[in-house]
Length: 505
Image (cartoon, rainbow, N blue to C red; front, side):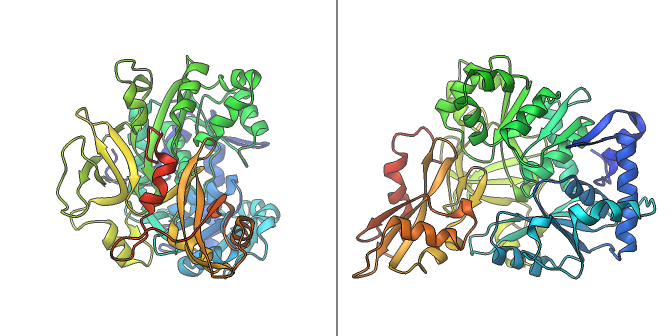
């Protein structure tokens, strides 16, 4: 591990070592390592000329675009950070993120014009290439390893998103640890289809750059784009299980085309075991890796490797999240006593690693609640380890729902749910879904005399929340089960739906 790592170091290294190899492909754009480095240097100069300085932030609001990756690398060299905004959020949620992060410049796609504002706004399709070309090459030199280079927002249990500040040191440590385990190298072509506002997108790009692999970045993960990238030579990819399920359901031709990948990583939401077994049977020569992590940890902290996926002596490990990465310490802690529990006993998963964020932007209390004084990050996930150290993620301390790789927290949705006319009370729970891993179900109590329907509730939420946060089904009940202190017993509501499942999430 480099003692003073900076985000652009791998790019600089590969531009010297293999200048003429293709580094990045995005649509019709393709650049060698040296060509791409020169673009980043010009962009760094353009940002400096625009007034960006160490400690500043810029924001990007768009579907996946090469500009997001380039701006991240360029701004980082100035000691500045890039805020990658989730374009799926509502305008109110996006506005909150920009108000808190206060970017000097907002780069946005044309389709998001008018959605958000900043002191200076540039439309990517219209102005980005000219902005970059006008810059004078600038090596940067203003960054320190513990400066934030990314601010990735994750939904919070208080109903407001929280901006995880990831430093140069965090991201480089994550990339190095991932590559040490997965062996990505110079002969690989890395397909990035996940949205860049997700750690599985932006931090995954950095893993490929670190390894010196070529990257194919997709604008959107459409079937045509995915299969086109595989046909063009992609050897590795990371997908949420819903994408893999879609391929399996598409029939023999799609399964055969997908088999061009050598390594398939999956995560960000639960993989139903029947789907995983079907995938292993469909692609017997493919290496599978399951990953578990979170934004606050720069991405991945445990990996279930290819050998474990096909270990007939331990089939139960298919339900595990694997083993910790190098440099990752992991504990399972009783959330009440804060004492470590024995292997096989459920508790909260705590992690200590260089990958852990510097803290939440402008939210010191939330940071203190998440990171202990001695550096342990409380994940909020409940799980256990077995005697061999394999990690099993079983439930969520904070009732988070993961649907299609997107985190959904109760308070943010429930505040909208309970504002729906005719709803007297209501909560959300996660229920199994063969495509998305789990999906959002609302359980509501109708107000006296109200003629409430499930359609009323769903349509009300869809007008006010990101699509993935909205309930896909609604149960209307007479009352919600509560504890003696009045807390809704969500576990009791979930149990009937998960009773026959091998995993609790």
